Structure formats: C-alpha cells, structure tokens
Length: 171
Image (tube, rainbow, N blue to C red; front, side, top):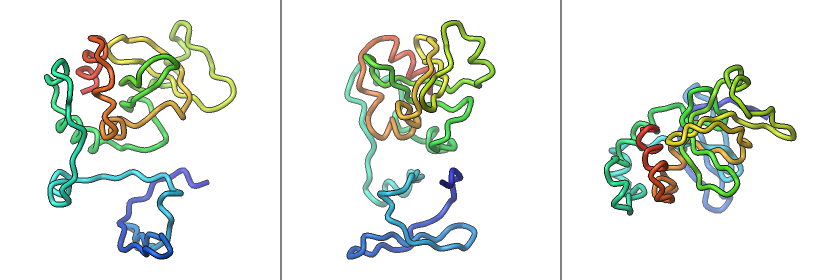
C-alpha cells in the first residue's frame, strides 16, 4: 500500500526464517521477506568488483559500439523505481515485438499524439520508442526500468538496425 521508496541497508539475513533485517537511513528497522517486496538495488562499480558480480556482456558485434558498463552506470545513477514518471528511460513491450528502449511521456503531451488513446482496464504508461520514434500506451506490467533491462540482457535481444539506433539514443 505504500508507494514511496525508502533507502536502507540489509544488516543481516536469518537463513532459517528467510527474513532480511533492514535498517533505513532514518534509523527505523524492519524485518522483511525481500522476495515479497518491490526492491531496487544500487550497486557501485567498486562493490561489483569486490563482490565479483558481473553484468550482461554484449554478445553481438553489431551493437559493440556502445558501452554497456557506461549505460549501467548512467542507469544506476537515475532514480530507478516502479512509479514511472515523464522523462524516465525505460524498456517497454508491445505484443509481437521485443522489449524496446523508450522514454515515458507526460500524460498531457500524450493526449496530443495521434492514435494514442486512453488505456481502459488498468494502469498504463504513454511512451515514445527510441530508434523508431513511435508512440504507444503500454500496460505498467509491460514496462521495466532501464537498469533492470540492462541487467537482464535486453540490450542484446534484438538485431534490427532501428533497435541498435534506439539503444544509442537511449544512452
């Protein structure tokens, strides 16, 4: 029910109970099962190296011109949450197409876009896709944060030239 995000640290984990002990920046503490929560992680480059974490590698020579590490750093520096706001860079999915980089539009501007109708039956996000510059209204469930998409290797899922151009524009 709480739609706000709070910054905190996992202080310890109880393996038997499978509960994380969280300490928030304001001093509050809470015990949570993180798999039941909406959580976003910010991991610095130093922590990634220290913890021996890796990110998705670019596998396609056609898209090797862009630097995945640079995009990860840029995406991690942005406010990356479930409530998408105008100007947020995201990955959006339309039926029959790959997840595609897009920018969230302001609802008042979206009403002026030709063919973009009000979505009935659930929350939606108006977006403009990078590379194609097409407009669409996408269900919130079909939108991922840019960082989350990079971490799940979405940047290497499509080989179309407009997709590669869209990645460059999003960067």
